[in-house]
Amino acid sequence: MLGTNDTDKDVHLYSCGMRLALNPQLQGTVFYQYNSLNQTGRWNARLSWEYRPLSFLYVVFNDTRSDLGLDRFRTTGVIGKISLMKQL
Image (cartoon, rainbow, N blue to C red; front, top):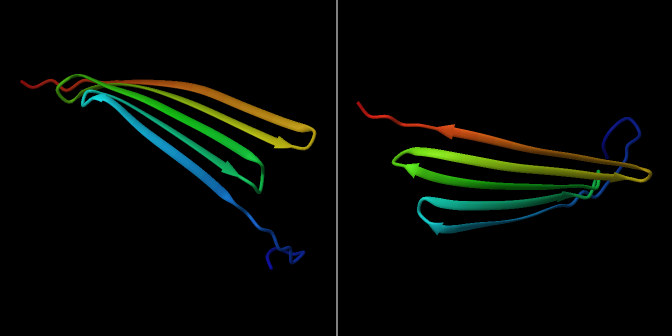
């Protein structure tokens, strides 16, 4: 029992993921997670490309959806990152 009201809840967290590689330089990752307590589902997809040795381009997509009765929420985002390794 938890909280001031001594409530008892079953919470289930489901997740699955997959990683795909076209070659060692180009890879994609997809991850999904669902939380039964707040009925929230989350997608996370990432594409990474090594365009030269130790230099990467990343693109990440995130999508979160909640269904709490009459209230439905959705958050979507895209993030990009470029890293460059230069040897002297």
